[in-house]
Length: 177
Image 1 (cartoon, rainbow, N blue to C red):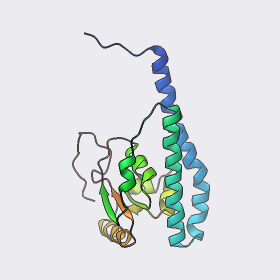
Image 2 (image 1 turned 45 degrees about the horizontal axis):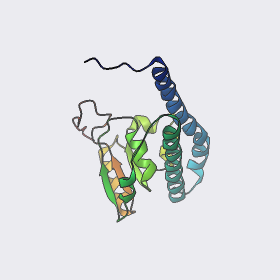
Image 3 (image 1 turned 135 degrees about the vertical axis):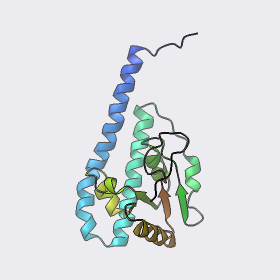
């Protein structure tokens, strides 16, 4: 029996929802960008880190609410509320989509994300990530020391060991860093 094809109207909505979803994330990042750029060199490290992480979390919460409201997305993220409640944690996740980091960071407070160096230098994400004092994955020793420092400060260290989005589900080969 052949599967019913979605209606033209539904397919048009899917395309519109995709553009609205990606556009809203870009808009949220662009709104915070000038503030993160200006605040990074001026705020003390601890204050910048706290504010940066809070604003990223808030922005991602707004983004997920937008996706649920306008883009027919449904997320059950209740389990994430428990992460980090009893002390520092290393949270290791695979990376099957563009949303997994967003979903985790939107619900887990005080996340120190280990990020690709290219993303840390990205115009859209870099300033906010640097203000939040996220950790670059380009230098393994610095990455390990940075993660250790974050754990000592009771943070949740988020790492995607595959180094990029998962293409061979459920898990790709892990990169050296």
